[in-house]
Amino acid sequence: QPADVPWPTQSWPLEEMPAHMDRGSFNALVEKAFTHSEELGETHAFLAVKGGKLIFEKYAEGFGPHDTYKSWSMAKSITQALIGILVRDGKTDIHAPADVPEWHGDDTRVQITLDQLLRMSSGLAFREDYDPDHPSDVIEMLWGAGKDDAAHFAASFPLAHAPGSFWSYASGTSNIVSRCAARALGKSGPEFEAFMRRELFDVIGMKSAKPKFDAAGTFIGSSFCFAEARDFARFGLLYLRGGVWDGRCVLPEGWVDYARTPTPQTPQAFQEEGPYGAHWWLGMGGPGSFSANGFEGQFTLIVPDLDMVFVRHGRSPGEQSKNVKKWLGAVTETFR
Picture 1: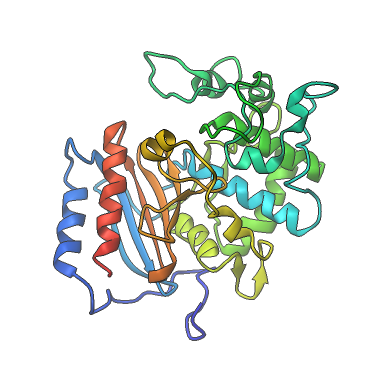
Picture 2: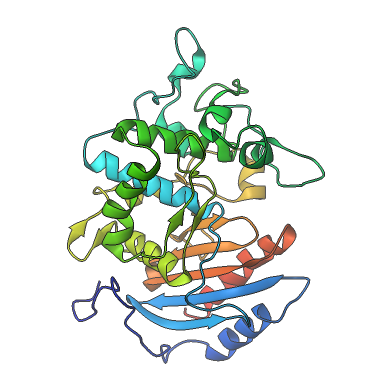
């Protein structure tokens, strides 16, 4: 963080857009995003932060800075931060077998580590699909038989591949990770939420955050943490600054680099889904960038070479979400 720029714990410092950028292309892209179209769907909020200052902010009609927005799977990256805090405090080891009570004895699943869960490489046979016409494991976990105990539901799946041998994006693994965090801390429900606020949200000024818990008291770390767009930008800035906030090491040294270290994937998965780290996606905003991605086009994009964070909320299902990724990539280029 530049020495003369206050940390946005209370409020965001403001700055004009930089002079040396393609403002015409930027304006055209923003106008396109806020004009409802079959290509991009609906954009509800868009923010840009550069040098630790808020330089651009726009909301659609009916939305504003004090509305809370859906995280969907951006919550996975928040879950990764919570594990980092436990690693910082010596309460968990990501390379040790995960603490999952459903797995025991000669069950091969006892070999699965937190690292493999964070990298979506557990090998569990969990199907990720959001098409309501073809109900899948994630829909059943969040709204069906698994909704009262999402981690137990996810941990009950058998192996489809040897642990660590195959990448497959699975929201179920994030809820297993979330419960592992609760077990390492010895707290669940309101006590775990108090930990989230004390060690993460309150530290960075993310006061609007509303994490949701299932009936078993587990943070639904795959999908449900609502917050204002400015607060998602604060979370992005924490990772842009290497896990440090106003002199305090919120995350252990190297944890952000761990988040953006590529996970081995098959060529097909790499081509169809994009490169993946550890509960963070890679490359949307050019080389070195990484992002928290959520269903229907929720994105917190971190671009270190530009010292920037972008936040976009909206409703862009299916192919529209992929188009929003390309749109964010194009927006990023206007600053180069």
